[in-house]
Image (cartoon, rainbow, N blue to C red; front, side):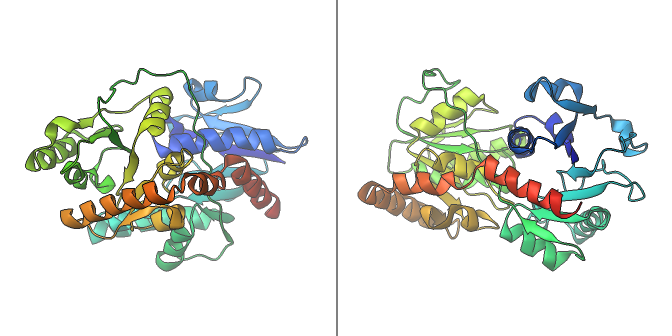
Length: 348
């Protein structure tokens, strides 16, 4: 069986989709049967992320309009992004697996016209596909509620892998006090602006890492100034894997109050270190964090502070770090890849 694995989204570094394509691609290579073959559809610059002897199909923008020739030996095209423009026409003898990560646009306050437009594009890709994969039960239920589905759908959770750098001790910013850590693209749906109030009545710093929208950064800093904690809020842009490891390892707690997630890989990354994680109750996060996370059920500042203080007290009293790590270990890329191989085989 020959698979073409779509890594087109790897053109956007420091994103969850980059990590998904990279880690799942490596895991597919590691778990494939001897007679199976994986070919990566990606830009030339991203070939370095896969073993040297791997097979590649070079991704080009023109393929939106003139799809590349595929060898007759190709059995499956795995489209890894739900609104991808890079999918073979249905008249070719290639089966299509489509991964849908989320319908987050439905929770972002967009206009009805934009929601209809995005749903239409999702439906077009679903209609082309032979099998749909959702990355959480929440996403699956969203698909069934808002789109027409006449083909199989399988839930396959993402894996999680955090590279370790035990000797790294020089992050781009090194807090001088105990600190709270948040990671993700710094945009409004991540909801990071609700976090500065958690620095009242304590001496913590807050470090927020991720590719940053400047207007939203200004909003976060405005909130920090309102609580007179602006000197303890640090927004440090995208970070290296070495720095990410250091911040996870050394933070007091991980904060992720996002309003819209199909999965939420940073949550599991922090849990792999046994850290207390504080999440919103929105979309997929309760499914991923389970009973091992603490939840903000609203974002009024007194409630946020209460949940945070009580959560830290509970964590320090019960010391659940071993159980948190065990929970996180369930989400691994090898298990994820093996589940995808089962889907591939099911449609040949």
